[in-house]
Image (cartoon, rainbow, N blue to C red; front, side, top):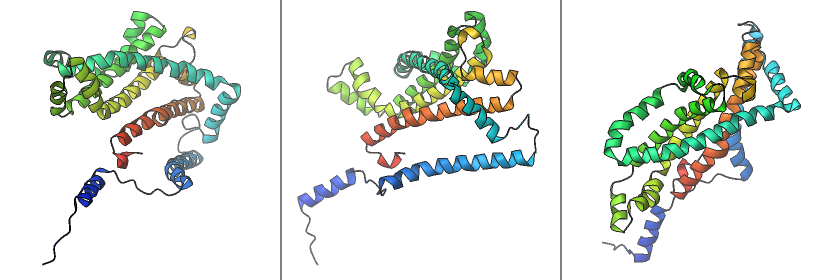
Length: 291
């Protein structure tokens, strides 16, 4: 019977190969760019074609469904006059500030809920209930409390984003293997060091999902607040622009506002959260999940 020649070096090489992520061959740079860009471009082209066909078939009157060219004309006018910069600035900088404040509040809150049993039992259900409550419901109360000011808008953004970020962090921490904090404690990590160097890094993938959801809730809350809390003193953001289109019964202006709001949401996802998520996945060897 033949003997198998198993050497120590070959065994180690085989184990290393099992631990090393296998990167799929993606071809040239142009092919990789085409593989990522063509599917969404094709989907957009198909959507516009369907829209154009429905408009040409006149299933709905012009004041209900505008032509794609009319909506593009509205957007192009904003671009050529420079008004689009002001719209984006007013809304996006509010969203970023509101999200940053929400993050500063939600992280300690999530840590307390995840690590302190009495806090989880007392506050956890309230935070989950706030997450399920539509943030637009807070707009009337915020206006009565703060008036037509930025304070009312930021209040609505906070109540929309904080519960989502906190629950995302709690979910990520709950998925950390219990042995990791015990190992850290055995190695001399105190409570704060265990949270900083063990719990938060281990919970990072789940926490990123909470951050993405928190940004989505923050952006939606901001648009709801800008749609209702309209005032010249607040400046004109995308929500105010959408409200103006409704007030003028200009459906092409309304569609343009919706598309611009959508573009900001997709842009933040592609430029901020997706690269951050991909970097975390690559650092953990999860290359098959990188998009």
